[in-house]
Image (cartoon, one colour):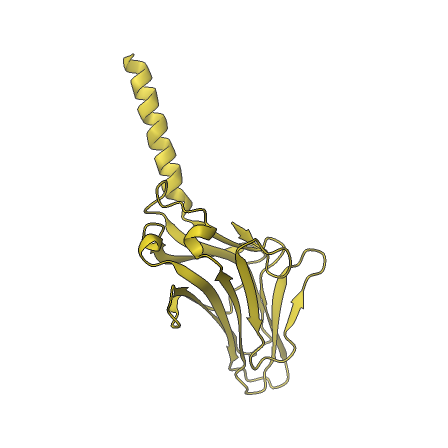
Length: 194
């Protein structure tokens, strides 16, 4: 399921951003960019901000309740991420967390340092299966962006979360492919015996 970052959010989903201590944070929605851009100057400060998605009825409902067809499929999130770091400029650390129903404390599923995917999506697995969502659903997912370090004072560093491809939430696809291959093989075998 694709979730646009700025406009055209899918029904049942709320997006929020926190500039935190970043200055110059901008939300680009031009020419289909659908990006959140965090800017930081190498000046010794350590700004933090975040991008969060809340699922109105839980992630299981948002994904269409695929428990019965894909019970062991692992939930993943995919989004483009790009960092432009000045020489000796420091690093962006991007931490992905999911929040289980009724919990205010997130579970970390991904920590990346100055990720640059070249416009492609970065795939992050949660360790949670579709079957797990039946017991404890996920209400929200959040990426915290922090910046630190850098020896060249005054240089600009930029982290971009997302692009025109949006953010994807999905179960892990290989299980579906394997299930499909097994069924084709079974049908072919039965036809040969008949």
